[in-house]
Image 1: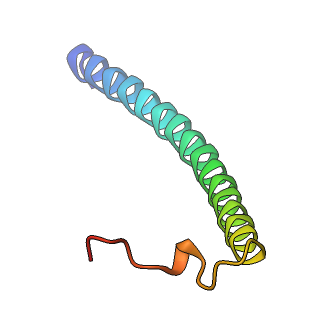
Image 2: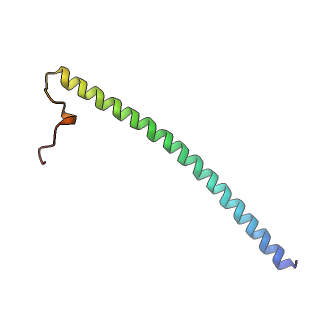
Image 3: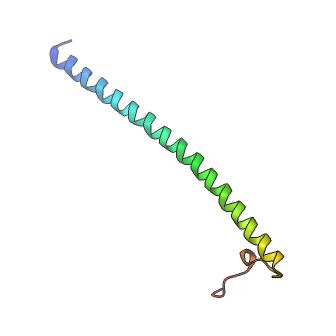
Length: 72
């Protein structure tokens, strides 16, 4: 193989290594975001349940979360 061919192969290997690293980095970011999204979803669900319980305890017959907005 000539010098130009080896230079091209080396450049392709470097590009592949760079793309592989970027893919790994992005995969880690996505995994962290997925965990954070799941955690925040659980918190929102807990807050909605707590708000509905408070509404029921205060004497409202239908929790606001289950009522249609006035513009419907």
